[in-house]
Structure formats: C-alpha cells, structure tokens
Amino acid sequence: MNLDAIDWSRVEHDLDAQGQAVLPGLLDEAVCLEVAAMYAQRERFRSRVVMDRHAFGRGEYQYFAYPLPEPLAALRPALYARLRPVANRWNRAMDIPVSYPERHEEFLERCHAAGQTRPTPLLLQYGAGDYNCLHQDLYGEHVFPLQVAVLLSAPGRDFTGGEFVMTEQRPRMQSRPMVVPLGQGDAVVMAVHHRPVQGTRGPYRVQLRHGVSEVRSGHRHTLGLIFHDAT
Ligand SMILES: O=C(O)CCC(=O)C(=O)O
Ligand SMILES: [Fe+2]
Image (cartoon, rainbow, N blue to C red):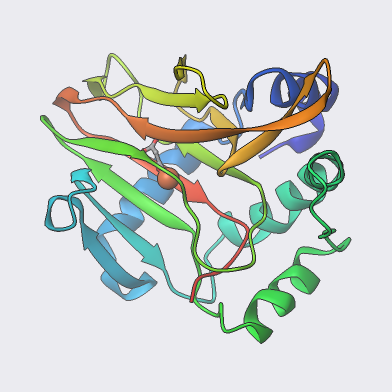
C-alpha cells in the first residue's frame, strides 16, 4: 500500500467527472492473496451474507469484526483522509449541511453515538455464475459519500467475467452505464449513492449504483472499504 504513488489530483478529477476513479496497484499481489485467504478464517468476521437469500445477487460476503486486521486497519483512515476534501466539497455543492472531521476516528465516534456501531468493511467471494446486483451501501443516517473496493483476484487468470459496473441516474433521464476495468490489486473509489453535477442552472444530484456482472469461470474476491459503520 503506497498512497503517495497515487495521482490524487487525477482521482479527484475523475470522481468529479464520473463518480468513480481507479487507484492503480493499491495492494500488491502478496497482500491481495493474504487478504483473500482471510475469507476462510471465520473468527475474523461478525456476520456472513449469502446473497441469493436476500435477492442481492449470487455469491457471498462477510463483514469483518473489530478490531480490523492489517492492512485494512491502516488503509481505512488513510484513504478517508485523502477522500475527505472531495466528500466535504460534494456536500457543500449539494447543500448538505454535514462536514467530515479531519480524523476517521472522529467520524466513527459520530456514527457510534447514533447507534451505527457495527464495522462495515467486507470481503466478497464469487464463483462461476455469481454476480452482485446494482446497489448502494447505505447503513444508517450517517454516510461518508465515497467508498473503495479492491479487486484481490487476477482477471483472466483467477476468473473471467465479473466486471465491476456502475450506473449513474440523472434526474428524468435514462441511466448511464460504466464498466470500471480493474487488475489485481487495483481499487475503485466510487460515490456511495449520489454526487453533484454542475448544470447550467447550478449543481444538481445524480444517483449512482454499483454491482458486478456474472463471473463466468473461476473465483473472484474483493475487499470493500466503507467509511461509515452500520446500525
Ligand atoms: O465485488 C465487487 O467488486 C463489488 C463490491 C461491493 O459491492 C462493495 O465493496 O461494496
Ligand atoms: Fe457494494
């Protein structure tokens, strides 16, 4: 994990232009394999979700329990600090009277005081035929408007299909699809649910959703980092 190697002005530009941006090579291959292997260590997690039981898609995921293991424990506050200026600027543009404190810990205290005490970082596991329906990761009143997903598996080698997709819904218009190309260790930063777009008569909001197309073969693991906690 080397956050200094990332071109954050390009990330900010891409987030403003399309609601998502790639962080290339966020985790190296050895770390990807180590994190993916945690899936089998049930004691690391607070709960497991089998997606087809809830009509969320097909496949499964587990939410980590506190304390988070490394590298997640360090990555979550470090990414928060880099993304906080965009989150604050987006809220100002959308007239949302919420600003995010300097430290992630302080934001978590706000979540916890409102009953959002459960950790949201998650590990997802897909096999052939699995997919993730378009969704928004909202877990209560307190929302940090950006989240990160790291692809832990190698496309072409570990799996085929399984593309990361997003849609952006503009008011009274049809949805715009986006496919985000990711290699092993690359991450996508994305809007959790909405973002401001500059219109001729001022800024307006667009709604975003993300999901994963069907995995055709092999296995695909993803690490999801959401900055608010859950009720
Ligand atoms: O598996 C993926 O790429 C999507 C993960 C996801 O939905 C998330 O991290 O919130
Ligand atoms: Fe998600």
